[in-house]
Amino acid sequence: MTASLPPPRDVDVPLGALVAELVTHLGEPAVVTLCLDLLAGAPREDHVDELRYLTGLSFDPGSPTLDRSRWKEYWTRAWGARGLLDVWDERASSAVVVGLDDEHWRPAENCLKVATRRQLGEAGPGAVRLLDHELARVRAQALRALGAAGDTEHVGAVRGLLGDPHPDVRRQAARALERMAARLDLGAEAW
Image 1: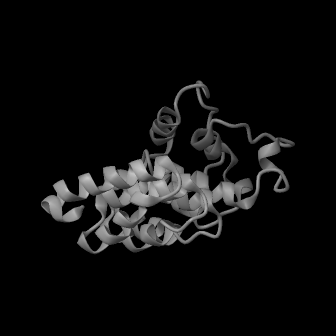
Image 2: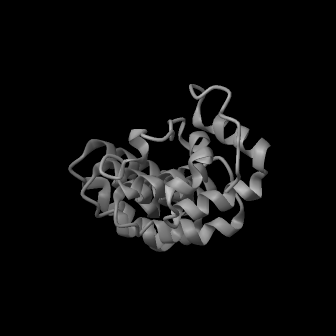
């Protein structure tokens, strides 16, 4: 993206602070574009300077992060989605919704996190599909997204996870129903 970015001042700060530092170098629109490119599968080798800010990891030649056998391709997509937690533009909405159908759970889960933070109602159908995911953490994050932005047609799917085998998922289902009931003015009918 850019020929020479200085390295981050301190890679031990939270990722949000690193992303904010990157924004000071490139501007928010460019960082959003970078995240969208990564989410779409841009090669990490084309963005090593920027990825230091998005991950806090080293991307120097020979680094494990450049070894595709150790750090699979889905990591690049996950890092792109993760960056959208800290920078945003409405043009990213459709890419986040598409990312919910990623073949690997890590980018999809990060897209759920973005959908939750940004309250993306259009992510509802994708979040509902992820309620059946084998990993409890993905199901729980899908419930968070639906609690934040789901609509009345999603209430039944959320209610269905009140009996999930995993306690974290059951708790998130109850919380999502509470949030939806309050946000959508559903009252007791949500339960």
